[in-house]
Image (cartoon, rainbow, N blue to C red; front, side, top):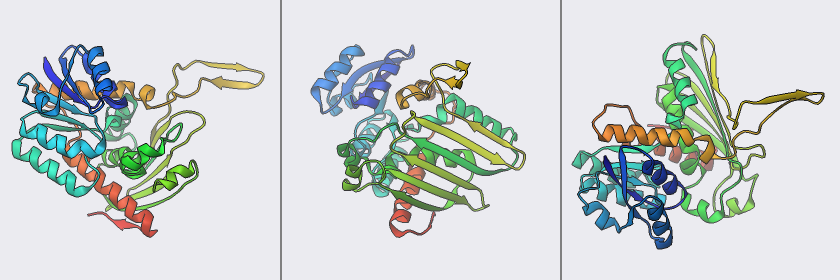
Length: 329
């Protein structure tokens, strides 16, 4: 059994804590959150206790921590957990800026602990199958990756102000997927965007609609499309085109039932949001994390992946502001 402390009792913290509580190899020991009521409620659901950061990290029964708190707390919690010798699973993004991210990674390296970043889409069964087809040579040499990611509705402005912006908060998942699927580092990025969904997001200093184009040294291309609003559900699609063909992973519905009549063919709506669409991915990523903590050798997105995705996100913001492509180093 791996003893776990969960930092953060918000939406994503509840997902992780409850998945861990149901896992045969995990024991959720304590919940840490500045919101005492939220921490108490989640602790009760997981048969855990409410603890402070210091008490959780000092507990010898805690083998690993899950950091699912606000992004601006990630670096300090990573450094404290690393110094305490705990294995770390941290939600994306690694930090809100590069310097802070590097500080956290330095402490992780100093203490030699495991750090896994919560890029859950790498663990989605459909996307993993897509990656396997690429690696098997089904599409030949990869030439183009197209990623579509659209949320059903915009987040509140209060969230936007703390999120780091659409590139660090939302498209960062797609930057990680681009690196994973291209199997080659992007060397250039160009982005453009608008406020088309909610003027309040613009007032908060962000955009709600964005397109990015990434290019690798060999010329491979990736186009990413994001929107904070999608009337038909949670739109999550990937297409990979290569010299021998194409492989794609489409949206998912609750079932694959389709009806037909005089008005045509009808299918069920696609899944409404990330909680449903990536339910399997959230469970599988924590299962793999626990297995690595127990000594298994499994490739997981680590601190370097988190830092690289953040570097691309910052370059995306610079490109948006300048209106010109930005070179990635």
